[in-house]
Image (cartoon, rainbow, N blue to C red; front, side, top):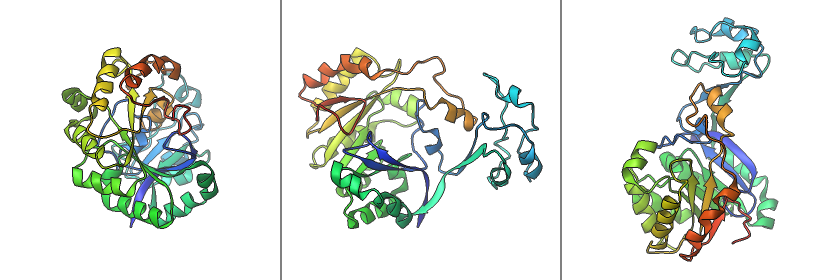
Length: 318
C-alpha cells in the first residue's frame, strides 16, 4: 500500500507538542483560498516550475512528447516581476516527467512521492531521540488525512507499534465514525476550524461546516487531547466579532478543549502558487504579525480557554 506524500518536514515545532516530524499527505477535500500548501490540495502528482532557476535553454521543449511546453523566451522577460509567462501548458501535460529529468538547472520539481507506510515510518523514526527529549513525535497532516482513510489508518497503526507519539491534523470534514477511528489512535488532535458560518464556510472552502462542528462536539467528549486551530484571515476571521463568537462556541462545547491556537495569515507561500501556475488570492494582503493577534487573547481566556498565538509546540501558556 502506497500513498502520495507531498513533504516530510523534520524538526517541526508548530504541529503539536515538542519536536516533531510532520508528514503531509497529498489530497484535500477543501479548497481554502488562503492555503499555505497549495501542492497538497490535488490528489495527483504535480510539477513545480521555478522561473527564477530557469535560464530558458529549451531542452524541456525539445523532449516533451505532448507539446505541453511553451517556447523559450529571454530569461529576463520570464523572470520580470508580473510576468504571465508559464513554462508548462497544464491542460496538455500528462506528467510523463521527461521535462523534469532533462532540465539542466533543476527548474522543475515533482510534488508528490509514492511512499509506503514503512518508507514513511523509517524516516520518522530517525529522529526518535529528539522526540524522547521534547515530548514530540509524528504529526500526520495533509491535505486532509481522512481523505486517505485506509492508508492513513495503516500509518497510524504502524506508528503505534513503534511507540511513536501521534498527533493528527484534520479539518474535520468527514463522517463521525471515521473521525472516531482516527482519534482513537491519536495522542493529540489538531482540529482546524475555517469558519463558523455554514454558508460562508461553503463559499470559502467548497463544503459546509455541519460535519466539522458536529465532529468537534463529539470529539470533545472522548477524552482525547484537542488543540483547536483557528486561521486568522484578513476580512474573514480577523475581527473582534468573529473571535468573540469563536470563543463562545468553544467554551460551550460539551467537553474540554486543551488549547486554542490562533494562526496568523501569511503570504510566504505566494511563490508556490506561481510554480503551479495558480492565482494567489491575496496579492494585496500583508502577512499578519503574531503580536497583532494578542488583542483577541482575552476573549478566550475569559472563557477559561488556553490560547496560544502562532501555534508553537513550546508555548509559554501551556
